[in-house]
Structure formats: C-alpha cells, structure tokens
Length: 273
Image (cartoon, rainbow, N blue to C red; front, side, top):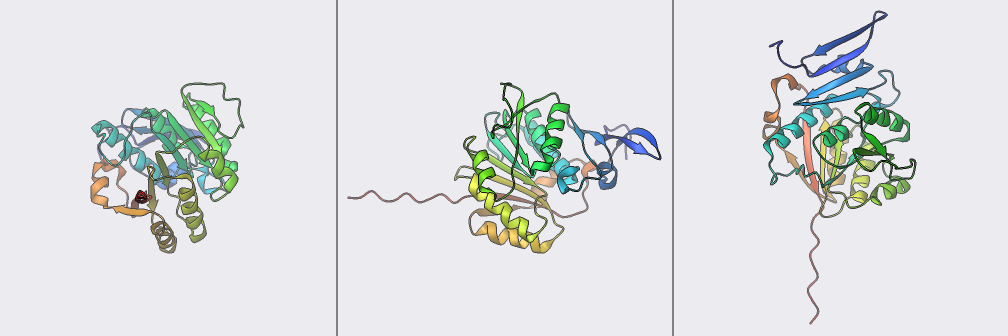
C-alpha cells in the first residue's frame, strides 16, 4: 500500500477513553461503523458524516457499499458521458430510498445534481438532516415539515416508510422522478417486497432505478428479483463492467449486485378507423 495516497476516509471517535482522528486507506467495516464522525474522500470531494455507532437502526451508520457506489458515480462524472445509462445532468430529479446517514444523496449534490431527495424511516430523519447541514447545505421538505425558506443549495429530506401510501404519495407529489437509487436495501424477504412496491409506486416509464446490494441473504435477493421482474425490465450489470472503474483502495471481498430497473414501455393503442 502506498501511504502517500489520500485516505478513503478520515475517522474520528473515542478509543480507550481518548479521542482520536486518523485516516484509513482501505474499506474497513469495523473502523468506519465504529466512528462517531468521518469525512469520506471521493475524488476531489469530501463528505462529512456524523453517525451513531450504537444505533438500533441499520441505517444509523455507514455501509461500505455506499462508498463504492459514490466512487462509481465520481468516475462517471469525470468521464462526462451523457449517453451512459446514468446521466448526471444537474436538472435530473433523484430520489434515494433507505438513505441512512445520507452519503449518496449528499454526494450527488456535490456532483452538481440540483434536485436530490433523501428518505428513510422517521427515526433517521434527524441523522440525515444533521449530515446535510454538516456539509453546509440547506434542508427542504416536500411534506411540509419545514418552512422551506431556502431556495438554493439544498437537499430535500423526508421520511418514507416503504409501501406506506401516505409517505409515498408525499414524495411522488414533488414531481416526476428521473432516478431512484437504493443502496444496500435488500436484507429480508419482507423488506424486499416493500422495496419493490415503493419503486413501482414512485416510478414511471422514464424512471431509471439503480439498486446496489451486497449479497448477504440469497433468499431476500431472490424475492427481490421475482417481485421486480414481474413489474420491471431488470438488468444485472456484470461486475467487470462497473467495478473496474474503482480504485484499488476499494477492493471489496463481498459480492455486490448492481441492478438497473425500468418499467416496460406501454404499447400505444392503434387509432380507431
């Protein structure tokens, strides 16, 4: 390992009763999830995050796959390929499901995307808001939780319980969604079904859904696929097609599946003679 390389992250916390701050040069689940505060370094961008290492909720701390995905996005942005399957046009509307600490949504904003919505269960809204503000960004809400007195440099933060019609309707009311992203959201068979139902509700024929999942529970993956394939055209992108864009510091031993989902185009009815 070349120590002159920029670290993947700078982490802060407490160890043996003493505060510490240090850089880490490879993905390490234990070190990242046990930190109280961190700065994720991706290309020329830094994202500051606070978290609760002892959270009772899975989204209360960082997951490595979100760092992998942000690095992939950064490589796409650097390439400036407007004809790829992911367009980082600043005017596209992105909605993230299961945002957790908010890394992906915040990073999308740093890449220039102006319309970003991050969502998770209500218990994690405060964590997402703290992290948006930690990156000197403003917060808005679709659901009316906030005054919405900031007109620029903002991210929308709102609660969304998957398959809850009231929550889903609120998010959908914000306008047509170009991209839905869900990272590490497939962890049980029941949640996989709720996730697909939410994707189905929020999307239209022009929405691209990006789902990156570390394979921990094959039954949950199978349930997700069976539900998704009944409503969407589903493509599993070969790992060699996208993971080769990552740098060697992000070597990831576990299997990561990257899915692309689109609703099939409806056939137009022939005109009546």
